[in-house]
Image (cartoon, rainbow, N blue to C red):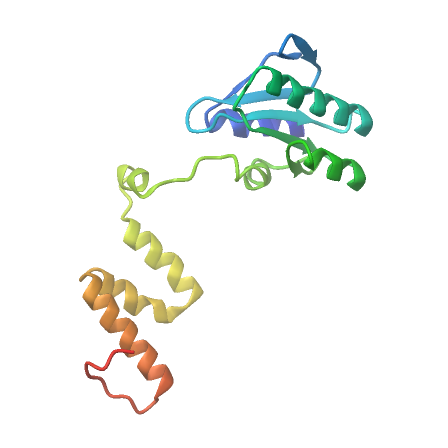
Length: 187
């Protein structure tokens, strides 16, 4: 699978619809290697280009698409996904016209997903609950990796806001005064 195919697979998996090639905007056809549009939460126009298109031509094409969107009074944000390398001056000029995301020439699915994360929908607490996950437990598991002291706050969270405030107060006071033995003297 080529890098462009992998990019399109990630976009399709997350609700983007592939557009026919060549892409037509305001009556003008553009021969990007691929293009997609958001269909649900995102309304982005995603242009995908590899190293096949010369940087100067790519810049003209992206500018022309942007102009076509303006003429058509489109509200779609435009993102260019570059698969492979592109010269830094060309990338800087492209960023003046569109959001530019880069992907290596032969990326894995996970690498593409990471590179395109800004375009992909976030998983919400509601969605986690639908999948049978306990959001608080998910936070506890990950927070324990960062700092084992967080466990006491996660345990307190099961008992509500006041319990968390008390645990935080104890934690701060113990850090400030090693001889602290407790009480209701919140910081």
